[in-house]
Amino acid sequence: MAQLFMTLAGIDPKFHDYGNAQTMFELPKDLTHKAMKRNSALSMFIDDKRVQLTTSFILARNPYSRLFSSYIDQIYLPNRWPETSHMVSDSKRKECGNDVTFNEFLAHIADSMLTKKSVEIHWAPIFTLCLPCETHIDIVAKQESFVEDIDFILGYSGVEPEVRELINMAASANILISEIPDKIQALVKKGQSINRGCMSEQDLARRIWTAFQIQGHIRNEDSFPVYKFENILHDELEETLVPLIEEAVVKMSLTPRQIASQRHNWQLKFWKDISSETLRNIQAAYYEDFSLFGYNIDPNKM
Image (cartoon, rainbow, N blue to C red; front, top):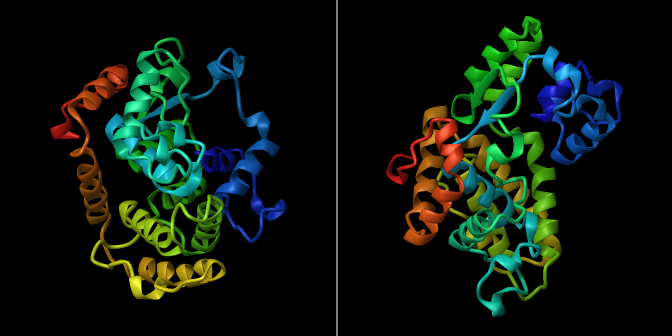
């Protein structure tokens, strides 16, 4: 979304120190964050008078898929190891933080919400972030129909056709091959930063490969090449993993519908192992999101 707003603001990466990016949508995540900080004027507080003069929208997402996506991005991958180790119930496993289960993750969030503790913005209920009942909102967009909804919002707001075309192309695209080296470099660096005894190089590589499958970038049929990592050294992991994932991503010929189906099947696989108590607590904690944005709270219909 940050790249979207900077594009609408007319920011051109070719006139800034943003690497070789031709559009704002080609920026790696770390450069996107830096660019937003440089252009902090794009952010407005709710009581800013400009809010009433612009088209405002809120982006909703099914709590079940949002929580699953947050878990894969932030917990399953090494983005928050070991700072989320406090979610682990077993004291012997707290040291590493690399094996927080989906159930432990959900149980911690539900407990924090129901006891009115602060919750990380990546997975906090949307109704707590934007206060939709107290904020002027013209349009409710949904992640599930993101491409269509964004196109409608752009047209409603009078955005020029050429800019709309650029944004629509970026919104419907899968991961860019150019993004993979930087993405894997960051993940390997974070994964290797924990104590060496917590996870082997091979297991770290397998975790990253599986996450790419879960996110729909690699076909499930393309198994992790174990033999390539049997005796892998610490310094060889990145240079070995990058070309293998690039090759798997390039050869993936799934349609958008098939990609969505693969992602959904992974989601169902993780949710089916959640305890009934944790599920009830999550439903209570996210009830407003289910209700306000019209999502079915029945997990069998997620």
